Image (cartoon, helix red, strand yellow):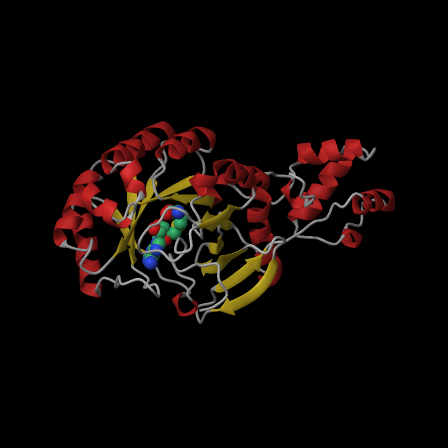
Length: 342
Ligand code: SAH
């Protein structure tokens, strides 16, 4: 890659660069620390010698965070930013306040090619993958912008993270590095629409990172109607892969289930879902559908949400209803897009 944005480099790669520039290897650590703090201006990197800074500048290296094109703050304190990268690609990220601390929901791709029929992020297809450094850039730019610490990162914005596995891995390693941002692996959550080979690899590579699976249906027939990915990775295989994930990692899986009026919110759906998940180390997160402009789906009624939850509970499935944050600024699940309107 020709891009000379230092944010994409881990310490090992920075050491190689220091070597090329005829500088001492420990300078790599210093640079990495500054970058992880979100400092982009070399003049603020006080412990770096001017000679090194001059060499970096002369060879075109820079620390680039995405530019904030627009920022909206919701009544509940949620902040949504539209970020633009150097090539003009745009994504949205959302900062949220919870009882347990601040969290950011980041995008992993510009657009998405998964085609879920209820989601805004996929409406214009996939433009490109983000790099691990660009994903880190969303976190650092949001922290700079809000002035708040961010102790949880959820990869639940635009894009399918397991469709961009290598760069997702890079992000996790960069942000977890104790010399840098030092985010605990258990403070990271990755959400997938159910790409089975990616889930298997993820269990091996990052057993400590939380995994969420967007299920949204109690059977193959219904899932196929709203989520094209189900044609490739079937319901039965997905549930089996999830069970294997829990055996291998001893970690609980969160199943996301957006309740859509008249589509997947019936009593039968709840019962079928409960029986599929029976005995699994699992937790269901019900999300009353967030309505998306240009999509005909409607949010399930409060009564149906309650009935669905009660049935799962009665059948012994752990379940919560996700608190919706930021819906007044279209920052809720499934509402992130890359265009600037709306
Ligand atoms: N591609 C990954 C990451 C996106 S996470 C995945 O599918 O998991 C975003 C979450 O919001 C997913 O669970 C997604 O299915 C859900 N979602 C999408 N559109 C939604 C909508 N309109 N209302 C509620 N949730 C939605």
